[in-house]
Image 1 (tube, rainbow, N blue to C red):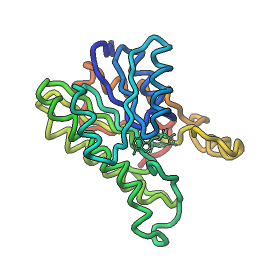
Image 2: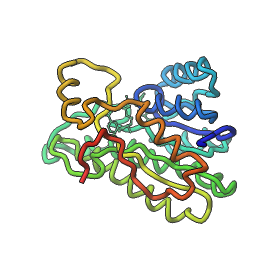
Image 3: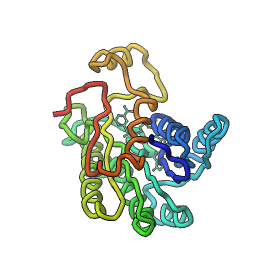
Image 4: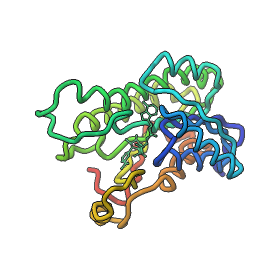
Length: 247
Ligand SMILES: NC(=O)c1ccc[n+]([C@@H]2O[C@H](COP(=O)([O-])OP(=O)(O)OC[C@H]3O[C@@H](n4cnc5c(N)ncnc54)[C@H](O)[C@@H]3O)[C@@H](O)[C@H]2O)c1
């Protein structure tokens, strides 16, 4: 079950964080993984570690927000699986604050990476998937794309919620063509750079399961959605969040 041998998968923003975990998990099920990141060395490092573990992987650096770059680089890759994981505030750092205090420049980055980036990779990969009669579009979203939060991340939530909605439309447009489209809405995950251990402990205590999530929690959900066995699962948002309330 869930054998991905012979499948070609792209995971965006997989040079670190939970995307790297998802890339490892896909490779461990037999997929060949294109490890994308905007930072070349990060993509390369993860591809090397997948190969060291016996998997098949190559680095493919590009910026998901640059449509022409995405289309040019993906044109020669017959993708079966696209995991849209690049997110947060893209190449910038998220600066949470109330929306009423923000200017338009501050919502460009989160909308660009979390919504437009997903549309760019989908637009590049989808025609080939339809031609071959198989495709799996999986977008890594967030609880912030499903419920309102008072922590100053409205543009991020808008990008994440927009991408969930976009996946639902892709699901219906392509349901009879062998292509599924789903989202995974994550809860609080471990951060790559931890500066404050007591903050992590405090955040973890708010998660019913008592810990923050990891790439090893995301990976199996992605593998399932990418598999042949999940052909009847489309247009869904799967919550992987340690039991946090999302409605
Ligand atoms: N960390 C969390 O608590 C959390 C919670 C909910 C959802 N998410 C979502 O999970 C995904 C991964 O989050 P993370 O915290 O592991 O990420 P991260 O910030 O640790 O890593 C993301 C990677 O994406 C790369 N990247 C950024 N912009 C890019 C672009 N334009 N093109 C290609 N690559 C780009 C970065 O260089 C980085 O290596 C994101 O979509 C995020 O929004 C994270």
